[in-house]
Length: 238
Image 1: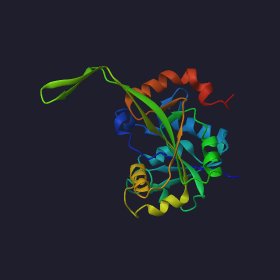
Image 2: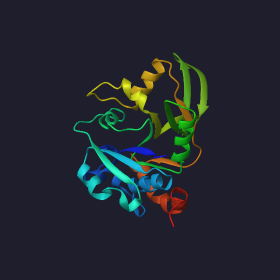
Image 3: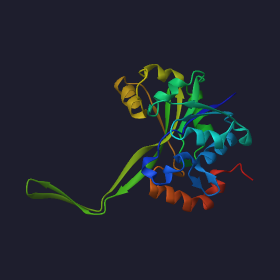
Image 4: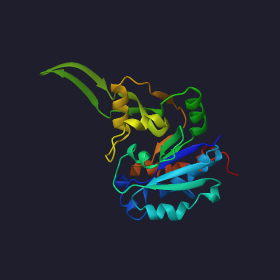
């Protein structure tokens, strides 16, 4: 069965400036490859045969690099935004989406099996699946709890655990029926909408590797770690 993916590759990468003044964020190099090429190689290796790149900022550079996808054994087409539409509304510009498809950000470095995520979503007939990663935040200070001027509690460098979206999703096309025409509508809008209507959204926890390279610190970490993790991230590469 044909498997379709949409990769969001149109952001300006403001948090990565000045690097993204010259290159669009998805083409920032990680080892020998731009991050977008890593994603395309992963998708091809996991059986996705068609990828739509949703582009906007520096779209011509992305198109010149990726072409038709033949060098990776996949078919690539493009959907161009004429105005910023956030993360979900751009999907409404793509008229031939299948019933279920993968959606992901173009700056995600992970060893997640997108194929397994897709197959589980389809077999369980879900509307929306979110890949999620556990994160821990350590406060670098002694935290005081006070009522007026009286100390009521104290924590030395407390840790907070939380679950974050990895920027990788599987959608049933029906969720797009709620997207307002011609307006920005993002992942946050969709989740709040579905929660308000008490609709089920599946959260799939991933305990493996994940980095969002949208910030300079995370990008530099990805550059440092990619060589050691290349076989883990691209197991189908020789």
